[in-house]
Amino acid sequence: METKEIKLDDLRPADGAVRKTKRVGRGMSSGHGKTSTRGHRGEGQRSGNSRKVGFEGGQMPAYRKLPKLKGFKLINTIVYAELNVSDIEKMDEKVIDINMLKEKGLFSQKYQELRVLGNGEIKRKVTIKARHFTKSAKEKIEAAGGKAELA
Image (cartoon, rainbow, N blue to C red; front, side):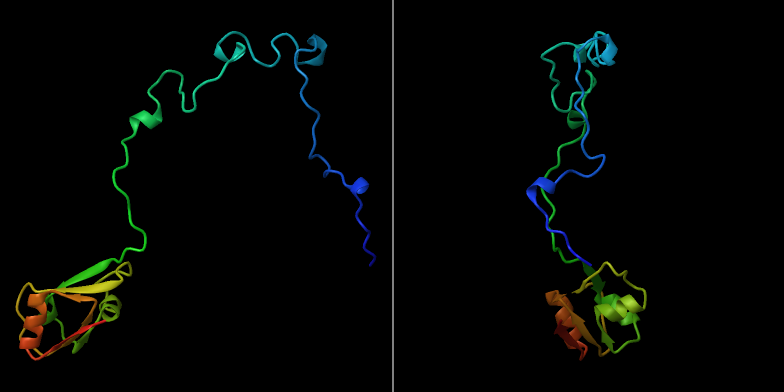
């Protein structure tokens, strides 16, 4: 198959891409005479018309109705699942981490990391892998003979 060399004098817009300009005010027979497509009376019919951006005909505009946003939201924030020592005592597992808790359905998939809090008591030996332990939680787990590993 032969390819034709493109020259500047061969270039033209695609069919239907270019329309004739609307010539207004050139007599009644043109279809755009008399009011020149501006309609009868009113603000938009007058010359020099320019409305403010966001103008809504005199009603309270949306940008004034809606409350102002305060602060900002950080991107790349970590969503922590919080687990108390008392909740760990109720579980049967020897090793606990965020993935195991998600698989059991205790936490939804939106949680990315695990934080262990020190509320309650623990008496059994267990290994916990988490992103953060409170001071009291770490002490209680290690006093029971378990391990608190940072993941």
